[in-house]
Length: 372
Ligand SMILES: [Mg+2]
Picture 1 (cartoon, helix red, strand yellow):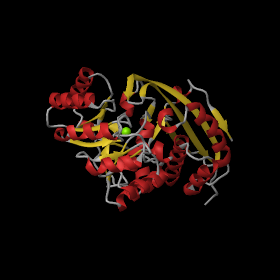
Picture 2 (cartoon, rainbow, N blue to C red; picture 1 turned 180 degrees about the horizontal axis):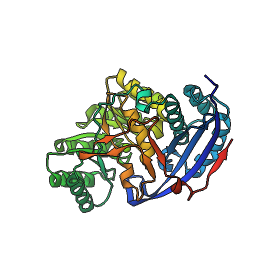
Picture 3 (cartoon, helix red, strand yellow; picture 1 turned 90 degrees about the horizontal axis):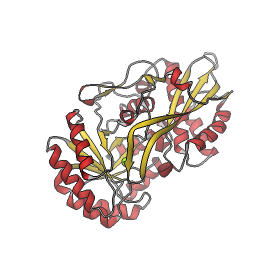
Picture 4 (tube, rainbow, N blue to C red; picture 1 turned 120 degrees about the vertical axis):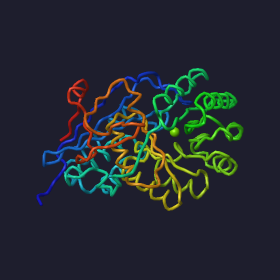
């Protein structure tokens, strides 16, 4: 086989307006400012990755991802694309953290390599074509009436699960929100909540105890990320299972949370783990601990979420799916990739790679940096 190497990398920062501002306890987001990475190899084939840096969660910005992507791209030119673990290790040696930009490169490499093998990404990851995946839809943090209105609308649209953003202090308002939503949507729909670090131990204890009768699947990130001690204390007494999100970026965090009994579940995001390579390790550690996981995202387009669905198909302990970020964007610049079907079932095509690509006309609107 002829030696295949990476010979060109494109870096494209894009911007897409959200349908409406998306409000969580950490603030409101009006636009997705994502960075696209295209990795070309000597065979004339390319893989595409996407990242969505959230400054309040990653500490990364779009400007920063573009700047560092130049360095990463230069280091990867001439390398064999198949050696993904070595490239991930190289990125980790070059800079600590910066999981978002690393994710875009990792995703592009997995897309490229599975295309070179001529198989869908889920097959490359030994995934299960028959796995059934249904997405929730998310209600942002607003006044009670606006949240109830959206919850009812999403139920009428047929979503099987609603995820509700909370995290206001005092948490009495959040209790009112959930009581009103459960009353409005009835009992025949699942609810999950996400406080995005907004409570402290006492507010979280009060809220979760008061909500115990509302049949809530789990609560993501109730208190400040990294406060493992209080999260473990909360996890011992909470009537609602605690899911670690911002606390668990990668496999090392996952290990610590398991050792400290600080959560019962993980929310895995490629944008936190630095891509698929390390997300596989989080899922594997969870499986060893007999834990269920969710997959979630930031404000990626259908391309990033397509890659996430292929990853999802590889793990039977991922049973919750928060794949709604493309639905919040005012335009869909992606061709191919995942489709939303009846009942909001999410499927991906059997084409090589993750099956998604950006519309070329859309990309022409933005600056393009080429490294070769
Ligand atoms: Mg979350």
